[in-house]
Length: 446
Image 1: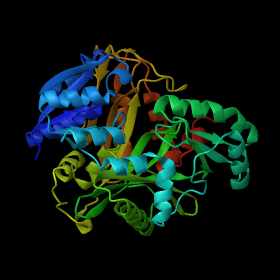
Image 2: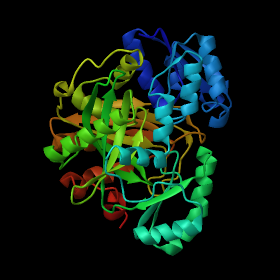
Image 3: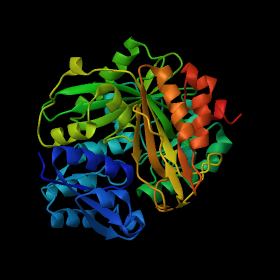
């Protein structure tokens, strides 16, 4: 196992990795920007290194500075967390060149799956169903208009690279496409350094179901059941749960088998997530593959009893999987909510100083929290400040624990999305389990 791990990330995911490393006896080195000098991950790591100014381009995305810091710290491995450099193939390759283990798949696999267009091609070759659309980048607006007409509206206009809903938009007619194309292309270029766009059919009233997989370097692979991530705002998840409600065992197995087949077809090794859309006839389509640890990984941990960070470290250190598919348990029901520093009505970020913070206490409530009272939430980074995960014997009990915990969650000094989460948790539609990607617009914004 590794002696010292540098964590090339910040916030709650850095804290999450530190926790597992402490339990395993692995030394941790944190990196931080000037804006994060008082951040919790800086205080809790064994050592911390300043890497630059607040903007991510001058700190957390500075590959050479992070590599240099890892060498100075004597780290033999780097965990990228999620977001930032976690799916940057050049970063993974630089780690390999410097003989530092990158906790994740190979640079080649990251590059292939990082391009949604290339990922579609790979899945078509593996005979995994993909959303109807085009498997090439668009040459311009005129081609986009022609393809959208042939596919049939509504369509999704998407950036080939990146995530988080950036460069993505639902398009219902020709006028909307004309208005949206240039702006989304520019946002994709600004955020991801590549303005490549493509179009696929919009699967309306779909469920967003993702499969957590683990694969090692020896061809062993398992799926750790599924997560339902359908409740989203701005194409970004805010509530995730496992197992998915109203999913029959036959479809569950088909999705799991497809995810494993997808991973093995590209030579994947480490933890990853294969995301699918499931339509109202229970037909499923490959959406994308995330070649990293997911924000929502705790709900899988809660129902399987596994530590996914530990599994990542084991695989990266060359160990084979210690269990097979038949050994993967499924116990109870877990729900995660993301706490954002944002206006719950407009979804605009709400940076500022947290004047008071009280987290609900309950034996079945888990917190992944990156802030404390009297801490500033800066405008430089993603507004997610915490996650809360609840577990019950079944979904009804989990929802009741969630509702009670949200009523006790106290954040003062800034706006948060807690009122929105409370509305969702109390809604009849959520209790009934028929959650879909348009849940908020259909049930809360009408």
